[in-house]
Amino acid sequence: MNFKKNAAKAVWAIVLFILTYLFLFTLVFLFAALCITGGICVFMLRPGFISLLVGMGVGILGLSVLIFLIKFLFKKHRSDTTHYAEIVREQEPKLFGIIDDVVGEIKVGFPKKVYLSEDVNAGVFYDSSFWSMFIPVPKNLNIGLGLINSVTVQEFKSILAHEFGHFSQKSMKIGSYVYNVNMVIHNMLYDNESFEKAVRHWAQISGIFSFFVWIAAMIIRGIQWVLLKLYDYLNVKYLALSREMEFNADEVAANITGYMPVKEALLRTDLSKYAYDVVLNFYEGKIPENKKSKNIYREHQFVMNFLAEDMDIPMKNGFPLVSGYDLNKYNRSKLNIKDQWVSHPTTAERIMALEKQGVEREYDSKYDKPAVSLLTGAEETEQKMTEKLFEKVSYKEEPSFLSYEDFIAELSEVYLKNFPDIYNDYYNDRNPALFDPENIVCEDSDETIGTLFSKTAVERVYNSLGLENDIHILNDIAGKIF
Image (cartoon, rainbow, N blue to C red; front, side):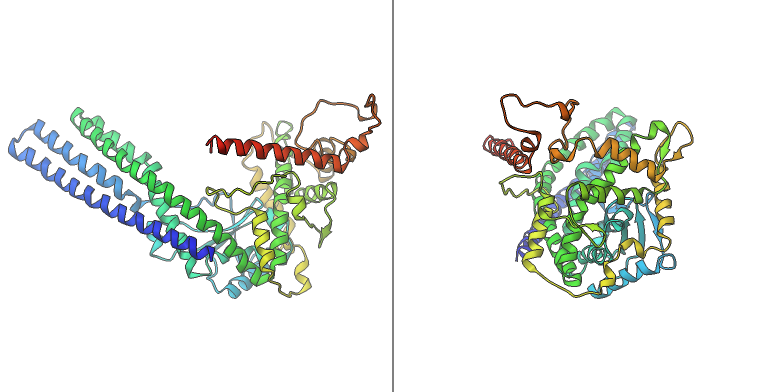
């Protein structure tokens, strides 16, 4: 119901843009025709070099505004794939087999190309232009190796089902229309570098040209003012629809794999991304020592499981089984504020929607194995992607590999074991002065470190901080800061 409601609003926003654009285009086209005709008349009435410059300047005035209004027709948005590694069916038959299953069950086209990337992510992408609203564009699939490293085969299948779910229903076409209209307006508002360069070149030819270019700039600013108001309105409708599209794609995925694999993969993703960032930050600190990783994904797996053990997160099928409590451990806000400027609902909102639907499916237990097992020569692939990742780093000397054992030892000591377990993660994301916990004395008190930093006490601290933050937000809203 919400999807249809937001889709209807998005359609109205598109219609409003089309009507506004056609009105502006008609005015500008007539203005350009008038300018060109006027320029010719100026020269014909009094032929001469000055009249030629004036006539050309008048023509440039009209043409500049017209070109500004139609330049988006020739703009193409190309996806950057330089940091991707394309794979084909002959290389990865098992992986392609899972993709076959998903596109077959959802009844969508197979991706034109399949890529591996380095991070914890997945997505369907394509090169787009204004004309892609009318001409079907082949889609490509990007799969992050960090994501494959974090999920089971069944969870991986649910992630693919979510991505292709965006294209499984004809109503989703509305989203692409709104997106492209958004890009058209964005092009006229912010993507003007080459246009402005050409206009400046014309202005430098003659002072007369410069005068008419200045007039054109004033007219264009007026058009941009109108478009900016329309852009804000359209963006709100697009983002509202985008959030509903995420819920819709989750529902498609749940109907393919059941809701539990979707839920468990969603809950684990933040932990996996954090673990991946921990490893990247560790090696950033190793640049002065000319050290790099041979297989960052093996280390990523270690950190993810280490963090899970440190936070008492249980394991399932070899992966951390993150709960909703773990997800919101440090977020104790009591407010429920809808942010109209976000493109995705929160993970908690997506989980709630999945649990409400409660779609269950039976599947073969063989799909409980790690998704990385789908890769032919997984370790070799991980090492190649690691090498690709470190190609971007500049070292003073030829770098050497840090052994896996040394990585574990150094990271455990420097990054992961700053404070004993007795502090119940209280000092996470804090930077206190160094102290010796064995020599702390609580004068005039029977309190001990164990009671001061008990789970109940730490819970109270985070609840208090959450309430204080809520008060600040409400004060900001009351003061109309947002």
